[in-house]
Image: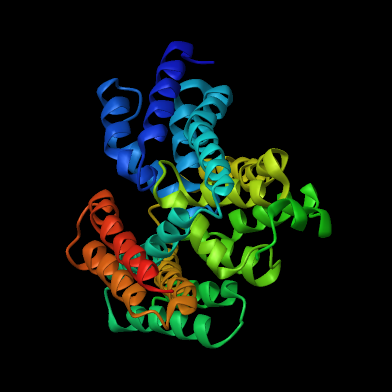
Length: 176
Length: 190
């Protein structure tokens, strides 16, 4: 490992942050950035690149992004402990709370909570898609791709991969 | 009376390999939002849980820290096969994609300047946004006859997308009101 101490400090910090990252890991990204740039472990530019790459590569983006930071600091072992620090604590919390939730499944209060909360969650999902669309759709053509994707996904059982691929090709041909 | 978890587990034992492979798919396909794929594979293809239960798991995950999609993976794995199932699902979700991603990432670092790559990503992102919106609409379908549910979905959407409030504010601001209304309604019902 290039710098074992730095790798461990990073891992401890990531474990703490992942335990409080309500609303997903992106909410604590600014904090990670401060830590790693203030210590001179990673430059601003590198941090931005790590973010871009983790969005390009399919799979667990934020885990991957933190692994790139870990990789820079401590090679492969650094990448591995960063990954565990990022997903381990939340996984345990998800597991424990799901078990508890499941145990009280038939209680009236839980049924009320479920019926009250689910619509909020769903509204947030749609909002997530909408906010993303607002951020990336900067022409009527790209907005049309988004609208077409919504329509196809709702009206057909087509594999979404084709929809993504079409969007990618149109973009690559500079038509959007 | 709904089937208990235990009863269903005996009926159709889902293999750990199936959990691993299907969450591997969710992960690898999950470009621009794993939620779309998680719902498609878990609800539509495998029929492991229905839309109601999926929305319920998603709800639980939104109130917890960490990546929601990893939470969905953990909960579905746990729902179907207990703790070992959660481990299989999470391993499927992370192990191989992480290895590929870390390898590809090093290569990609050198190509982030290219316009073609950026444009392709832009087009993909536009389509991905549409898929995300459609997934939300699909999840809303079981609630379409409940006006208050539609109202609160609209309020959550507005708080997040229009008023741009922090997620925690939206969730903890609307949740008590929404639950209270359901509570009052169920007390009135015979």
